[in-house]
Amino acid sequence: MNVQPIVRSTLAAACSGFLTRPCCVVPAALSLAGIGSAGLSAVIVAHRSWFLTAGVILLLIAMWMNLRQRGSVLNTSLTVLGTIVAFAIGAGWMGAF
Image (cartoon, rainbow, N blue to C red; front, side, top):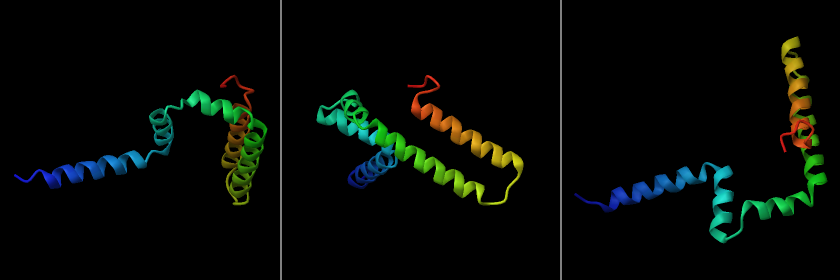
């Protein structure tokens, strides 16, 4: 039995699985580099207003793209409600942060 192709395919599968989850790659890379997520959040908090502004702009674009299509009242209501809730959570108004 030749073990080399099995090891190669296992490593390739592990790497591709690892790279498909960017939410896991960044914290893992920071941990390997000796930088914790708390240190990253301290840097990001300094620019919170910029991130909040970018989030509002992206939410409004997403809402506009959804509302320009003619849909039911339920779809329109859910779009507006979802945008308001997402902004409120991101802004810290709902106690999530």
